[in-house]
Amino acid sequence: MSTPSPSRETSVSESAARSVNGYPMVALGLALIAIGIGLMRGAPLLGVPLVLAGVLTLAGLYMLNPNQAAALTLFGAYIGSDRGTGLRWANPLAVKKRVSLRDRNLNAPVLKVNDQRGNPIEISAVVVWRVRDTVQALFQVDDYEAYVRVQAEAAIRHLATCYAYDEADEVEAGAVTLRGGQDVVALALRAELQARFADAGVDVLDAKISHLAYAPEIAQVMLRRQQAEAIISARSKIVQGAVEMVESALKGLSERQIVVLDDERRAAMVSNLLVVLCSDRETQPVVNTGSLYT
Image 1 (spheres, rainbow, N blue to C red):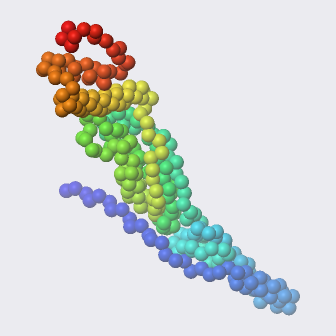
Image 2: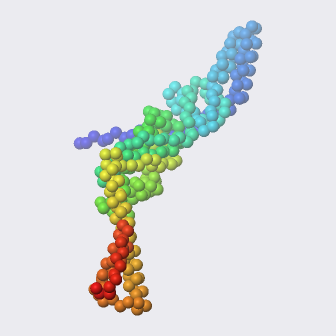
Image 3: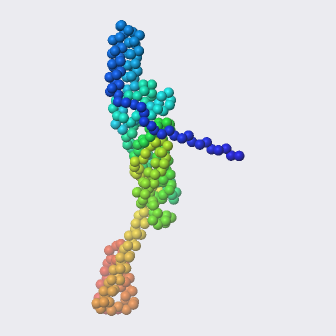
């Protein structure tokens, strides 16, 4: 009989904390202290509690900047999050843990991984993220900033293994590659990052590949391969254009009846024209001073 796998504890979602504007509480706390000090001489039993109450009231004050939140815990129990700004006041006994809600940039380090074809490549990405849920960020993971860094590196490594660096004979024509399909790859990276960051209450705003290159040990070989592919592609276009030009020349000569060529001379003319048009060096013309057939 197999033992069931332990289920993951359901994460707590963020809720609003019971907090108020802090400025009235400042006035209340100072008033209590002032009244308590005034009663210290005549009625110390009444003045001391008022002073303590004023101090306790002031102890509940805290400051929140724009795009900043505070998660409140009371004796280890979560009691809510405050997303207000300015001077705030909440239960003086509650612990306030501040969390930034601003957009942040993560510039991942350059990673050396293997692409879909097993070629070693170097890849890196820039991720824009922000905290969505303060409770998950603080209590679902140990350190949400470290969690984001580690999961981002894992996502980039996995992404590199799902695509080839560029098109080649082994890759299906039209397939998405890291170099050629940057928009599709960016969307795939963002989706995977969002899935990984969900447990930490973090949203991915943008993700782009910032560095992509072959590893140094194969960079020169791949560069020569790319150069060879470029030369082959260029020569193919040159030959195609030359054939069209020769065909047009023969058609023009035939239609205008400038010269009548038999099959042998026509083949020689085609050969000479193709040599002139397809050669990557300057041709040296030979002037025939005799007849056409000598």
